[in-house]
Image 1 (tube, rainbow, N blue to C red):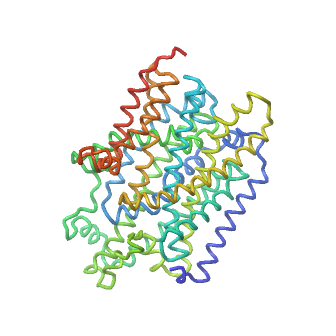
Image 2: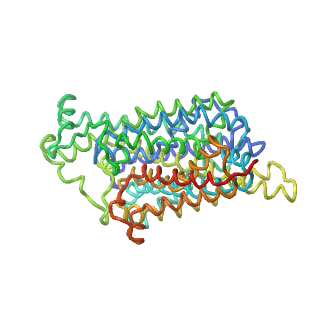
Length: 514
């Protein structure tokens, strides 16, 4: 496939990379005065830029590749998760963001430090770092699939590994010196690139399919196997489908509360605004803008189904192409279309969109995990014995980014084998790995916000048990410990509900009067 790239395609890719490095260099020239400036941009970022950065982080490679995969395999029910996203963002905007600004927090876990002490704060920060390695590594793995297909025409293990290394280096080059400012502005640029790229693909697909809009919708509404690919709301009492409405109004709301309000990866962006009102506006605006973006990517997948799986509608010639495999692993149909069907120039442009989505994901993980490591762990430890300048902590943040990058790379390699074993669709896999950390964090924060219970010991216990309860619900663990088979395949949203409930009850057992 890489051989199908023309000189123009490679020029476009090279131009994007030069622009990316140039942006990193520009912000590197604007030295950060202190760690708070490096991690929070001096609380001076416009809320609309923050909103776009939140979208670029939450959607990014997972939506760019997973959205079309979801539309190709299934229907529009994933779009309905935005109900849960909107309700979750309102909770974060009204309840959590004002509390963080009142504390003048650099990380969200300082709220627990204020309530229960430094031990609880560090425990929550450690759980976040573990969870972000899971989530960030899975997103890096998805992006590496695309880059491996571009560079090597396959997704063999060795090539996935080298693709992941390339992406980590790209992300590191943008954020290392410039801090959060460089991430926010580069996210804006990359959001524009990959959104425009998706619009271009949608246009070419519509033009290539010899059907009117009404005919296309009719064929999607009832496929030959009886599937309604236009289905938006699934009201079945189905505990195995994460996109059923019963799941959206329970676990999916919890997932977005945790993602938007308890995950430093996203919340760090909200804390760069001038005040809590702008931070609240940013998260709600990001949720609203995300709705048409998700629709766009799912629609691409729906049209790819017609293009590749309905030769009776396309006049033949495309049947069976979507079933091609690399080493037993079915490739993402979106990348196959990009590399084989788009004309010269546009192929390079859309490939840049894929890389932009991937780099946006990596940037956020590097900076947010570094902020927790430095502000919640390293700074308190160092300041007990000696006074260090703010430049020292900026440098410490840069060093920790390098270590985080190595960790994300290692996790992406693990995810390569994990996803193959689980057999989950790409989007489901990425969302499900986030549950491991979120179960305990939700239980702990609900205790801190809505009750006067909890202690450092119960916080730590809740975080650990929340993680273990989620682990125990994985199909491979169920097999090992001999639990009933009906527990296999329960949607990750219900795993989150169960884990959060148990963690909440554990945390309630503590009763420090702080």
